[in-house]
Image 1 (cartoon, helix red, strand yellow):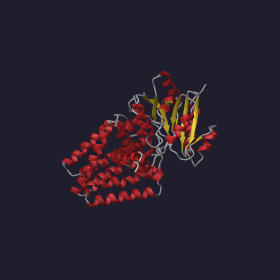
Image 2 (cartoon, one colour):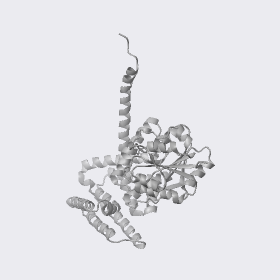
Image 3 (tube, one colour):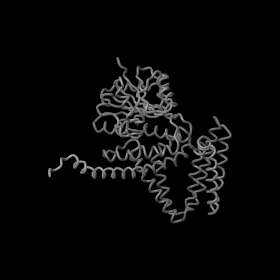
Image 4 (cartoon, helix red, strand yellow):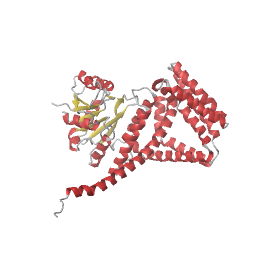
Length: 449
C-alpha cells in the first residue's frame, strides 16, 4: 500500500538547512510517509545530504526553479496527498499527523496550508522580525484560505495534476504557489488554513535580501497576478487594513518631503533622531553579526552627522540620547544579560527610546500639518496594533519599537511594488496586443499573385 503522504522538498544549494529539515521529518513523524528531495541544479553538497538519509534525489538537470522542481516531485509521488515543504523548514512532532487527519476527516478538502511558528531559528533581529511577521499574517488569516502556500502546504495529488501544478514560467522563487491557489479558488476548490499546523523557519534574512524578495519576487509579480485575475481578497497581506496602511505611509512620505522643502531640511532632524534611536536593537545585531568592522563606522558616522545637524540648529535636547546609543551598544556587546538582567536592560532600552521621542517632539514646528501627521501615525499604529502587540508579547517592547520603522518601510516599498507591477502589466499587455496582428499574419496563408 503506497504511503498516504508524500513530502516533496525542492532544494537548491540547501545542504545546511536540508539536513535539519530531513532530520526533523525522521525524528518527529511516526506516520508512514514518502520523502522526495528534488535537487534543482545545486553546486554544493545538497545531493550528498539527501543520500546520507537514504534518499536518492530527483534531478532537474540544471537550475529550473522551485515550480519545476515541485512539479517533478509531485509527478513522481506515490502518495495520494502531496505535502510541499521548503528545504529551510523543520516539521514539528505532529505535522504529518495533522495533515493526514485533515484529509481523512474532510473528503471535500482539496488543499491545506499552515504557517511558521513563533520561534524562528535564526536569532538575529532582522530574521526574527521577518519570520514573525510571516507567522503573524498566516496565523491571523481566514481559515477559508484564499490561496496556497508551498512552504508548508498539502494538496490532493489528483487535484494538483488536474490543475497542471505550478506555473513553471516562474524560473526562480516567486509567487508560483499563490498563482496556483488563485486557480484553485477560481475552480471552486476548497483550501483550508490551519493555524495549528506550524513549522519552524530556518532562514537567516539580510536587509537587501528581504527588500529584493518583497519587491521583485513577491510584490511586482503578485500585482500582475491580481490585475490578470482581477482577484483581490481581503486576506493575508492584502487585507484592507494593509492597503490603507500603504496609502497612509505614502501620504506621510509626501507630506514629509513637502514640509522639508517648506521649512528646510532641518525639520527632519528630530525625526532622524527618533528613527535612529528606535533602531538601536537592529544596530546591535548589525554591529555584532553582520558587519563587525563596517557597522561601528556607519554607526558613529550617523551619530556624528545627526549630532552636528542638531547642534547647528540649536536642537540640544536630542544630542544626549544620540551620544548614549554607542554606550548601549557597548554594554550589550560587553555583557551577557540573562534572566532579571535582561528584563532590566530591555526596560532601560524602552525608557531610553521613549525619552528620546519626548525630547525630540518639541523641536518639530507647531503646525496643523504636523498634527495631521501624528494623527496618521497614530492611525497606522492602531491599524497594525495587533501585529505590534504580537511582537511585544513574543520579543519585548524594545524589539517592537525597532520593528516599527521596518514595518513602515515595508508598507512604503509595497506601494512602490504595486506601481511597478501595474506598469509592467500594462506594458506587457500592450506588447501582446502589438504582436498579435503580426502572429495572425504569419499564420494566415498568403494570397496568390
